[in-house]
Image (tube, rainbow, N blue to C red; front, side, top):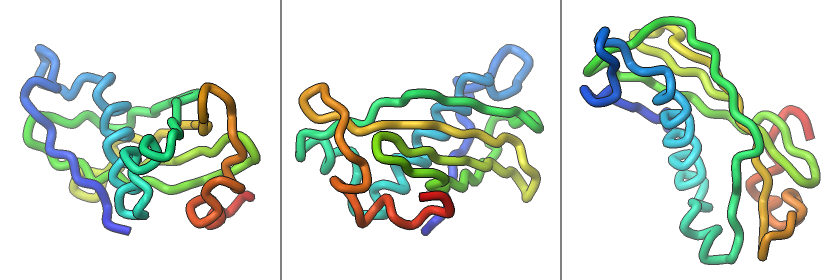
Length: 131
């Protein structure tokens, strides 16, 4: 899969010229959406099937500051899948240096009810280290 690249925008920086911490969660989401598109099951397709994927939890560890115009390469990996939820891990790098790591956990809902992740999308959720 192709690594997602985010170029830091001016408005994403605080008064000190540092990328505001809240934006890294957005960068993780952008990378996750890009990965799903690359796999052929983007969120538009899932939603057309009547399925939504809410975030159950998200976390980010900040390692090094980034600034305006920095390019952050975000690697996202499907890390864990259970019957009702799945998790991604993220590593963001600028010039080869890790600037953040993160994780997010999600579920799938149809008509407001949880659905079996592996059963509904076996082609997507069968390639992790932990199944």
